Length: 112
Image (cartoon, rainbow, N blue to C red; front, side):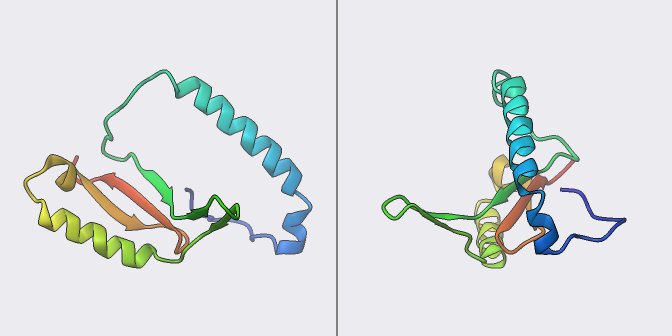
């Protein structure tokens, strides 16, 4: 996710005008990238790569999705997991970071 360096974010009323455009183009971009990379198979994270996660809670009965604001709490749990399993390459090889919002996390390789 890039850092906004120039310009000003739109207010909600102005941003709503572009919602349909963003939905359509965002979906087309996602599908194009998915089709391009879906046959590649698993890959190894390399130095400089990052994977961004969003935290959500799904209720299939009511068809409701929540975005719990628990990133800080989950980061502490993930750090504890890494300390509890220092002998595993997986635990040592990933560092977790807060992302833009409290419902987002980022994972990066721990070492080059």
